[in-house]
Length: 349
Image 1 (cartoon, rainbow, N blue to C red):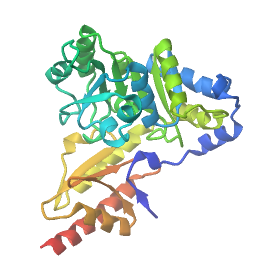
Image 2: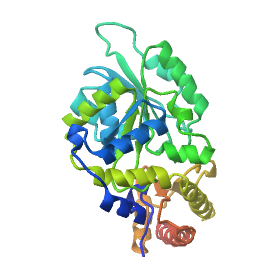
Image 3: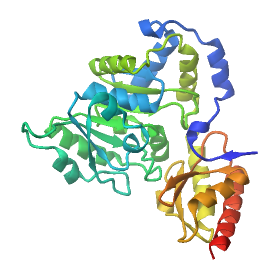
């Protein structure tokens, strides 16, 4: 049996999702006539505390559509140098939207220094690209799934309002933050102009994300989605799984968090593994290996024993708990990682 800890995108749809997909009422979403999609979008808007929402094929499409709807060509997007948009979304906003990234440092807690954001907003002059948007991320993937606090969002919102800029939240795993803290997602979303969140990660739907915001803004998102080839037809068969995700799969994220802490505790106890347990706040565990132990060799050894872990590069490794990963799986993964570390250390000695 393979224990796949590469990402929570590897989840399989639940039996309830498969049943809902088989029974879904459908129509042509290109005409706004798919009742299941319409219901999902309404549910998403309500959960996010926004006027409207648009169903998209992926988080990457959602973020790209969101940025294209906020900005015009040549404008700058202020975002962290460790953000998912920068590292894992193929440069789409630059290649397809003509947008310019203005990177600021990402701190270990997933925040961006407020003075760095302020400093990235250039004076009004013909020779400067002008800021069009500030982007935040929560939970923060490359910072180990840490939760960016609500009060920080309030501070960024105050800065953005003063400088008349919108704020977009890449909230792919926002429900993880909500469940871990016991706060509603609106605690964060009330401070942003738009939000993208994924159905296909911890919420376990097979496909899809949503972008939410004001009605006129979401209309622009829908047009951007169309330009990107994301106009969909009888897509209620997929949206039905998203409805189940929102109604049945949110609270169970707490189980993933417990399992992540179990996994992290076991890994941290292994000789040769370096892991800051304070960063394990949700379902992501990021760790490094002692000097001399090759991370690529380590992950290859673990794979041979049926445990899949992502090598993030730079000596960093990532394991993600999700629907289908049990406490026993986490214990077995620790045993396999222990053997992998010992083998790799012996070879490097």
